[in-house]
Length: 434
Image 1: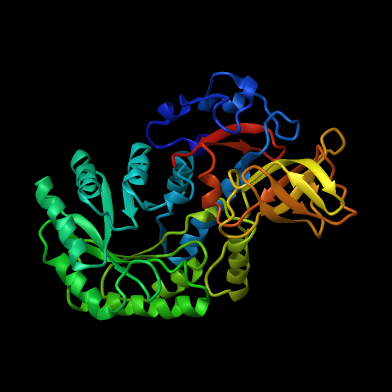
Image 2 (image 1 turned 90 degrees about the vertical axis):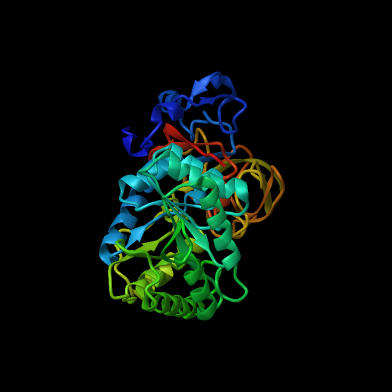
């Protein structure tokens, strides 16, 4: 299978040469010394039992389809995307997103910025406020090292603006750094809570040598309802209009208006489309989880988005691309099984994982859906407690696939994740950099 879509835009050979072996979770103990780029040549198949379980696998065709879905969504709605790289921290997936037109990669830390830069991202949006000399100096050093690299940072206070300004003075550079004014909401994370404070911060950026006010940023993903999101986005729009009216945005470039987690990016798309600042505007959403999607919260939000019908949507759907497979290792009670997967293997911050498929080696041709009444009721470090009907066919030695919510906290548990085709042949592997 051609995996060129997953080749980083820079340093691909270095990544392919990454050594893997039995000290890396998910690699068969008998594999010996192995390079990342050689994983797809081993002839492994998950269902044949060639991989130790638990195993995290991603379906290549679904990853590609999800990436195409977002590309079409952006086109239908006049948007750009700077997907959250922290979701996967996988340069091979960054490459797929950038090849499908991502405007930038979004990060949260200087480490994440360094990974994105190293593997070919030419524009990075740090959706965070760098704090302290080390982080701020690293931001200026990245610009000084590469005149073609673009970096956007956040600020929500005069104190934060002064920290960035001090960094500019230390760097002694004539190149201004682009700053996005961060807007927040009461009880949320960072960000100016009202229009007055936002204007004061915008004015501080605009008058400070070494800084340019490039646009407005927000994150609405922690809000619980579409109504709360819509209300917050009205404040966001009011801030953008007030700052534009004062002529504080940088000259000679479109104003960047950006918001959007992975739950409400349709509401963001709808509201950003209605903001008119009297000049060029770049409307950027930042969903990251769409590339893997999920089987829980984001799938529920996707169904809501489709039912609402308020934005243009591609004809095909997003599909969960990431699974964690485990053995049924014990069925100590009629209504309980223990599976070989725990908190060290799959994320739980959005709820317990959900069993989706099962397979009996040597007796079934392909995996089948798990029936009703099967559910994880708890996880230990390496064990999962699966409640099931007494009539469930699951037995010791069967394999079970699990989907999850918020895939970010599953990605960060694996250094290497297998890429599989529709028959669960291993065609490659993805390396993460958490």
